[in-house]
Amino acid sequence: MSVNFYVALPAATWPTAVAIEKCLADSSYPLRIKRFPVLNGNRVVREGILTSIDGEDAYLQGQIAIASSIAEDVNSINGRLIAAGSPERIKSTDVVASFNVASPAEMRATSYVVSALIVCFKGFGYEPQGYTSGRNDFAQSLYQVPKLCRVVKASSLNRPLTICMRAIGR
Image (cartoon, one colour):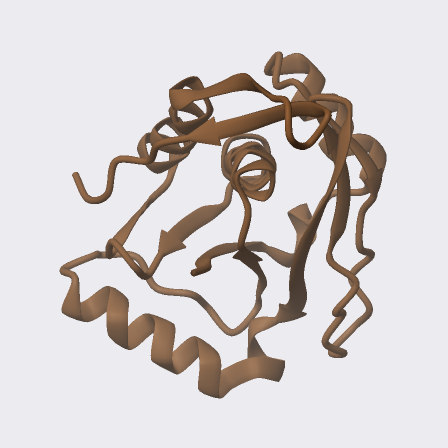
């Protein structure tokens, strides 16, 4: 099973790798950015983000694009936001970052990245499975998710394993 996350932010605030790394460090998030996508005009960038958490690499599969270049997806998301009663809408000039999360390490890393994009770069986040969305309050709920994680010894794997529980909904 996988979970999807979306973040929309003004195109002018899409960060560089250095800027997101600084935000993560300033927020005391235990995550390093190893590779961060660069916005490329109206093209859809499908590079994802390579991070390091708990000493292990976590690749965050996803894409970034100017909303106008993925209008059908944005219309669908905005429709879901309306149905959920959110006052927020993604504008055609926003950058939309989407992430598809499949593992606990990816969940933790995505929680930190999405939170950083919201708090430091004026983003708006949306998680369609639980119909949750928002700005700083949503970001706070995400970075609290990792506090529900713990590292356990997995003798059959010969390395530590991170186990996370996530509260769904509000």
